[in-house]
Every structure is written in structure tokens, then in C-alpha cells.
Image (tube, rainbow, N blue to C red; front, side, top):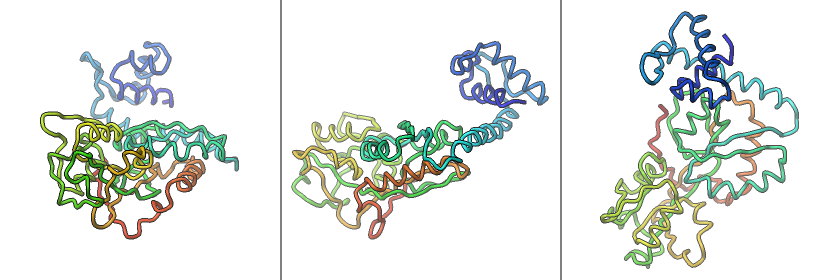
Amino acid sequence: MTLKQLNYALALNRLGSYGRVAKSMGVSQPAVSLQIQALEDELGIMLFDRSGKKVQTTVNGLVFLEKAQVLVTESKHLEDFALQLSEEVQGDICLGIIPTLSPFLVPLFVEELNQKYPKINLTVQEAITEEVLRGIKNGTFHAGIISTPIQLKSNLKLTPLFYERFYLYVSEKHKLFAKEEIAISDLEDKNVWLLKEGNCFVDQVTNICKTSVNQNGNFVYETNNIDALRRIVEYKGGITFLPELSTLTIPSEQEEMIKDIKGKKRVREVSMISLKTEVRQNLLNAIREVICDNVPSQMLSKKDKELVKTNFIEK
């Protein structure tokens, strides 16, 4: 049994086709088939059912590959560990960051990160929370930055970074525009624009205002993009919720559309998540330090703030 064979089997489970595996890994299709067959022969069990048009993983195969994924991930960590023995902060790091945060957070810290730690090669990919967790466990991401709290079941750890307030963004056409501070009870469901379902941000908004309506009249707009939602409010009317960092880039002529929510400051906790066994902790610590140095200082404390739940439970 080799790591190459395990990687091929994991890829076949994920992609469902020998041809796709071969293309993604830059090898021939017969090579993939032979390696997986050799693995099955050695194990004495059938990992895949090849009788249909699409290759299906057997029940035994799913159980075996779950353990194999842990072994493959740990082998990558072992390779990385040798690089981290050096005191110099250097190496590659791939972060998955949720779409409601990434376009506003990354520009705040990436320049200073490059200046302070020029040998960190950072890659950022936008992904929803479920994809971030899956990517960490299968080795696609070394860590993620997500909205918390969430309920975890696996070998993952969370490190809070900062606490981001929720604001309202109100159209100039709306009757509540004249108010500087708006109570949640003043909102009307039909006037509230939300992100599409399955996003932790919309879960939190639902927990704040007790509504899941995502339409206005006969027009429905589904997006994970905060800026796109903001523009809908500007041109279509109504109200939406904005996270604090997104308000920093709003043009001065639209700043009056940003409204405080009456009552205690409601916030989402933003945290870094990684495997407990992640060997690149020195790189993650460096990134965490630079992020905290560059977000507004009032966001670093959760004192006198109400933490809004996400409803997310790890599968």
C-alpha cells in the first residue's frame, strides 16, 4: 500500500471517473486503474463498484477512505513539518475565507503581511463555511477564516480573531432612511434583502430579525456577494444588513445609508480554524498577528457586545 495509491483512490471517490482522476493528476488512465486495482488486491476488499456508468464507492470503501484521508493529510503535514523546523517564517499557506468577509478583510492586511513576512506565500480562496471545513480536512486548505460560533465534531480548533458589528443599509427611498438608529421591530420582512440560503451570514441575520424572507415584490436576487446586495438596495430600494468591514469601503456619498441597530451591539465572531495537528502554526500565528494589527481596534474586544449565533453544525 502506497500514498500514491491512496491519493488515487481518494481522488476517484471525489471525482467518480478514472478519466477525471488521470486528468487532474497528470497521469494516464490505465496507470490510475492499475494502482487502484493493486490496492484493492492487497486489501482484499472492493473499494469501488464499477458496474454502472459512474464509478461508485462501496460501503467498505467509504469506511476505508475516511481513514485513508487522515493518513494522507498527516503525511502532508510531516513533509511540511521539516520546513517549519527553521526559525524563519516561510512557506506556502492556503486559506479558505468566507465570501462575506474575504473582499473586505484581505486588502486590509495582505500588504503588511508581504512586507513583514516576504517568504510567506499566501493563497486565498473564497468558500462557504462547509467548503472551508471540508477543504481543511482533505488538505485543500491549511486553515480558514469563518464566522463563528459553530458546532464542531472533528479534530479542528477555532481561534477568535475579532468581533464584527452588524449594520443596516437603508435606501434613500425608504421611510426609515431619516432615522440614525433603527429598531429591529421597525423592519418589514418584504423590505429586507438577504443573502441566499446556506450562508452563515444570513443565518445570523435571521437570528437577529427573526425573518428569512429574501425577496421584494416579484423580483428575487440570490447572491453571496455583499457588494451586489448593497447595490440592489441603492437602485431597487429596501434594506439589507452589512458586516462592519464592508462599511469601510462605502463611498462618502452613501455613508448616510449606514444605520446603527438600536440596542446592544450585535456582532459576529470571526475566527481562524485549522486542524489541531496543523504544522504551519507559525505561519498561521504570523497571519493572525497581522490581521489583528490591521482591523479597527474596537473590533478586537467582545466586551458589551451580543454574539449572534450561526446555526452551523459540522456534518
